Length: 155
Image (cartoon, rainbow, N blue to C red; front, side, top):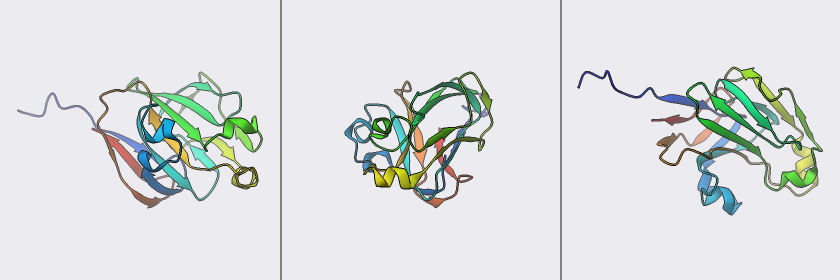
């Protein structure tokens, strides 16, 4: 009635410059059928991966192709770089963060050499999903932008 009980909207920035697309457009069925949760994807134009939100790094996969951030609102967010990139065993990936580290939105997390992915026949799409949020209302903003572009809003 007075807006007192409205939930705060959370802006999710694109983790990389490129074209934001619907998660359903990703070629991997684990992601496009939302088995990993609601989310969006970005077709990157460069390999600098930044934090889409402020939070704490919960874990980084040993192959550095994926990491989990817990937002300040205790929402878990997975950033997964490429499809089947775990097969590269870390080749072409560099991490700038570690588990337990606090990060600010837009802070550099990873660097991926997109040429290495291409040379190994890997799709370089970057997925952002919310694995533990079953009733998440995510408003994805489709289009091209840089890493400072708001790609989605949690309603």
